[in-house]
Length: 386
Image 1: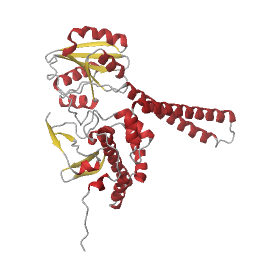
Image 2: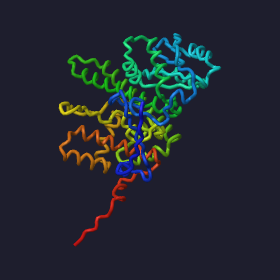
Image 3: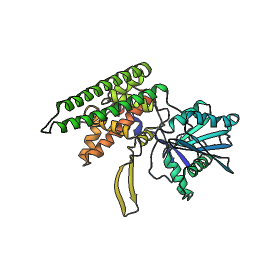
Image 4: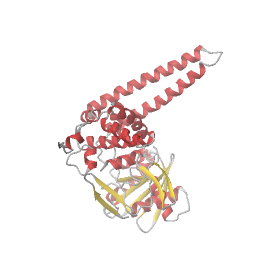
């Protein structure tokens, strides 16, 4: 795989409200992924390394399922397959076989929802090198190899071979505090969806001629309980943020249009953007980067955003863009300018979302205070001639 590093310094710097900063953009010149974008799908970070650079001799590929783990070791010549129980006891017992070669082996697995989380944490805590790769990469790699068999054992072999031949990112877990923030955010999201369901059911019940008050009262109690739990979680979030991330929270809420919820989401999922080099990588992770569909002179499809990233973050940012369009001067000017050019409302909203990502990234990454007049302060003064 061939990579070219391109430095960009100019108007984008002013738009991101960063002074003396030079974002770096990574461009893939020989990719089979197309426009598939995710944190590790299209954007490769500088700390991606090959197993040869780590001086390792063995890769253990793991295909993860709920009850069992299919493993395959690969040393560049031959494979060895295993199958163990997906439990802490089973994992630790298997790891003991590699204690003597801990610095010479790499464990690699796909991101599989939540089932890989305990596994990768145990391996990392035991001192082994471990990586989590986007499943899309493995799928494309298998297609490139013209592999037509699809079983758990074969998948484990493909993952092991991929790790031996291709650059991978080593797993770097979020801090415990950020993990707690994310768990509270997910709990709030789940309770909010449940509350909305009961609101709809309550509205439907009120339309029945023969209403049962006991049922209606029961639904109202559930709604009140959910609201109480949501408030409790929000209070816990405020405590966590004020205790561990007061500076980042202050910087984020200083951006016009960014409130408590958005600030907490950014802190939980991104921290200080340690794993991102530029705002384009963040946009790809969220899934709001453009995905044009053009080929030659005949194919000119309607472009969309990729939607390959985190849907929760995309939803939160979409709601934040509505506030930014009203209160954030730069975002409002962008929206009005695009609207006057005849762009659709959603297109303008997505543009505002991307502008917000640039502002948020610049403020947190480079530790800057938001200034709504930053661009104007650095524009040349026009002197009128009479």
